[in-house]
Image (tube, rainbow, N blue to C red; front, side, top):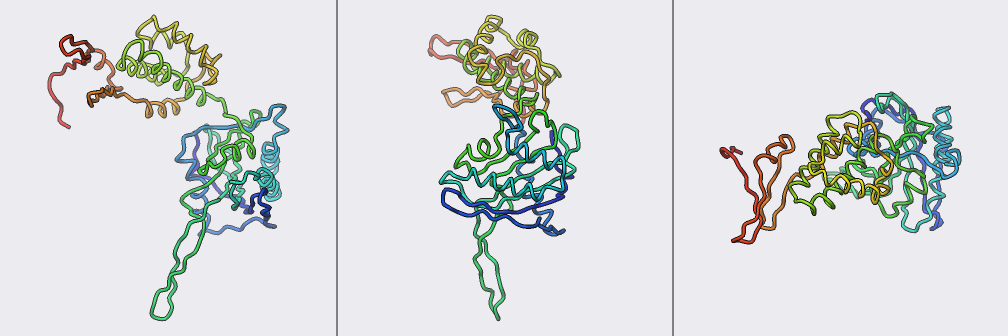
Length: 352
């Protein structure tokens, strides 16, 4: 979990990169930008807003041989070891980004390199490096008094409500390649920012594993439980799975299966499905791990608890009181109509 509320901008450097394949130039500012009380809060909101609103999917610098060969890892380490080098390093970061700007669709734009302090991650206060790029400009109107009339002036500039590209490199977990958050709103070349510039992989902590395991369970429910049983059992299996994650601090696979698998015959199916699909979710060898509560909360919001019928009727099951679905909803077959039905028991209808 991160807290960016108290983040402070210690240093800001602004440069510009063009598209190398179109022979566009690079512009490096000689000195850091001097912020003031008027623009600082606006810039802070511009840089950090997207990270507060975005789901926390962390990355880490990576290299197939050694982390020391990752350019951005080395540059980030240089700043964290000596923050006074931030402006010189910002030029190197901008040059590195320029070298990756070869795809014909890559847009030119301003590059902002920021040294932040007073950020909190996993209850640790750390500093961080922010690298941001603005690419798209918006039209806006300015007005000027000319005699007895107002004149409109059409201008172009950066929309402070939307960050095009950015990353936050936290001074945390250096040995694992630092913890990194990234955003990319303009996906004209998805490899440009993540792979070519940053060279990162997903950070495989408990948050990552919890999300991946729950996603694996969701697909197992859809691909195996639903065909073997019915939609109700698919929904109830996922409900029991999420509840297991919510009430436990540690995941243990055997205990999990014994608790959530209503039909024991599906346990071998689960294990077989994991052998076939586990690598896709990076959980092929995972049987025990600490559970991340934030990941469980995020997953619960995305899991559907509705049975959609081809007769344009929906049945919504209550995840808060799952025993109601078990006790008061029954599925059957009507010979006369040659149709399935759900029988729902109740005492009285509730007011909306």
